[in-house]
Image 1 (cartoon, rainbow, N blue to C red):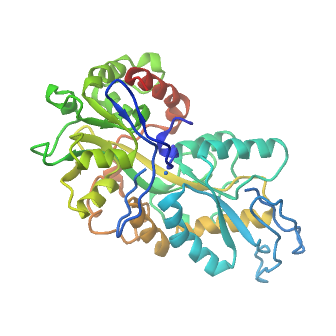
Image 2 (image 1 turned 30 degrees about the vertical axis):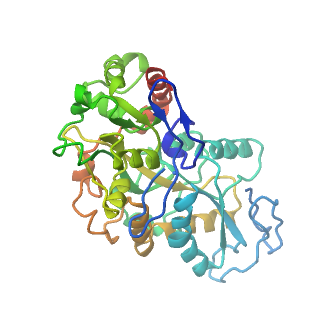
Image 3 (image 1 turned 90 degrees about the vertical axis):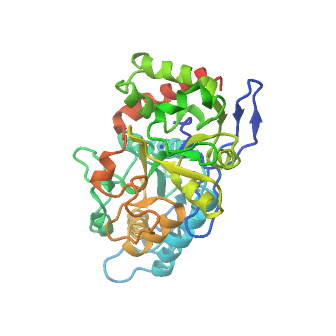
Length: 404
C-alpha cells in the first residue's frame, strides 16, 4: 500500500476544513461491527541465545523460554511482535489469528502500530546497523511489501514451515522472479463506486457520470486520488507511468474538481454518503455493507470500466535468529489456515484468498469481493513495479489539482 498512500494509515487525525468549500477530513479509522466489520478508515526483538537464556532488548520480545518440543522445532521465544494497523484491524487480528497462535504455541503476540513506511525504514536501518529488526512479522500492503522485497529486507517464506500458503489461490503468490514466496497475499478488496440510493435514481454503470454538471460538490474521494487514478487511466486509455506522460488523467481530475465535495477517509466518506452530503464516492464495499445493515440508503457497484483491486500481505524481516524466524513464519501459517482466514476476513469485510475458506453470503458471487481469476480479470490491478516507481508522484499531482 509511500507516506502518501492513504490505505497505509488506518488511524485518525484531527478533522480539517479548507476555505475552498471542499471538506478535507481525518485519516482512516476502523469501526468494529457485528458480522462484517466496516473497514472504515488501516518494539524491538531478540530471541533466545540457544540455551533458553537469551536477553530481550526491552522493546518487545523478552527471553527465550527454552521450550522446544523435542521434535526438531527451534526453541520458543516468550513473544513475537507484529506490526499491525490499530483499532478493529488489530482487534480482529488478535481474535482470529494471534489468539489461536498463542493457544497452539504458548507464544504471546505483541503489536507495533508504526505505519508501514516507518517500519520499513526501521527494519532497513536495523539491518544496515547489523541489529535485529524491531518487529518479527510485517502486515502491510502488497505495494509496500514489494518495495521491501526490492530492498532485500525479507526472509523468504519456507513452505515446509508455512505449508498453508500453498493452499491459497494463485493471487496469493507474488510475481517476484526467482523467489517463490518472499511474502504472501492473504486477502483482496476493491475500491468500488458507491452511491446514495435516495440521490442516485439507478445503479451507475460507468464512472463517467461523475463528470455530469448535476453532481457539483456531490463526489467523495480519498486523499491523493487513492483508488481512482488507475480508473481514470483506464477511461482515457492512458498508460500508467511517469507523471508527465499522463496528461489526460490530470485533465480528467481538473474537470472533476468542481464536482468534488468531500476528500476524506472511509469513515468520513461513508458518513457523508449516508447523510446525502455527497451522492457518490469511491469506497471499500465493506463500508457500505455495514451501513446497509444499519438501514442506510446506500449501495455499491463495479462499473463497466472496472475498479482498482488491492491486497494485503504478511512477511518476515531477515536478520532474526533462527528461532524467531521460524516462529514468525508459523504465525503467518496460522493466518493462512482455512479455519482462521475465513472468519478473520469476514470481520474485516475483505475477500480471503483461500478457496476453502467460508465466505459469507453477501460476498459470494460478488465481483466487488474477487476471489477467482475471472473476477480478478474484471479489476484494474496496476503492476507492482509501476506503483512502486510512480505512484508517489501521481499522488502529489492529484493533491496539487485538488488544492490539498
